[in-house]
Length: 272
Ligand SMILES: Nc1ncnc2c1ncn2[C@@H]1O[C@H](COP(=O)(O)OP(=O)(O)OP(=O)(O)O)[C@@H](O)[C@H]1O
Image 1 (cartoon, rainbow, N blue to C red):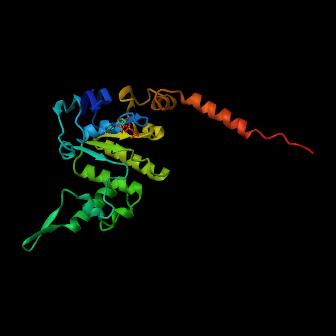
Image 2: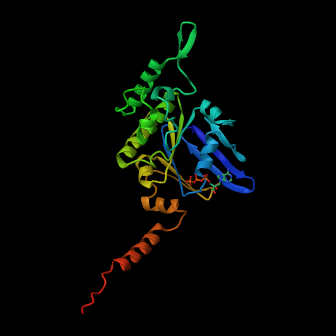
């Protein structure tokens, strides 16, 4: 296989006496979707915070294109091409679409002796880039971000990351708060980003969503990598069990069903 775009070797993270991540080794390639799976508290957010420059690892190395990198801040990680989109798109509800698209990288133009924000061009680009991802309902860059649906906000945030040249796109639970149709749209956008050669890291609790778009899967259990496999190597049931920390969900399901059966049993009728 080609050289990974992103390579984690022996990453560990402790917060004081609390060891949260242990010896995580992972490779992410261009044009692939890595699904990072795991139960609540498994360490997924901590790992992506290391990748997005929020936390520094206690030990271990991160390399991009074979060269070690260390991120001093989220801005530094972004400068290395790592974009992180959070559950609600991380956008600003009271800003217009165009302005939020260019936040931190304002497009300007001259107006007499002044330099001012180029609202018309910003709106034009934001709308065009988002529409290119198939969100055709976004047609006016002056609209407030707060008026967009959850899926549209995700699309806007992903379009922004793509526009600013992200090579790694980290999506933290992008479909968690969405209905079926909107989630499908976001999954389609993830595939579009993959087609552009972007390495996508998708954090999700939804096995169906992961299986729909994932090429590669890593499961964290209690801060350690418990499994690392490629599409087709494990069944949905096996993945669900792994995500539940290795406990057999099938056994739990059978238990629930038998309890429900007792409750559903029709009461014997008492004839007077
Ligand atoms: N700053 C911190 N200080 C101490 N402990 C922390 C800190 N951040 C995270 N932890 C602990 O690390 C563990 C992993 O947390 P993390 O948020 O990374 O898990 P997660 O897999 O993202 O969970 P979820 O799916 O619920 O978001 C948890 O037990 C959490 O309490």
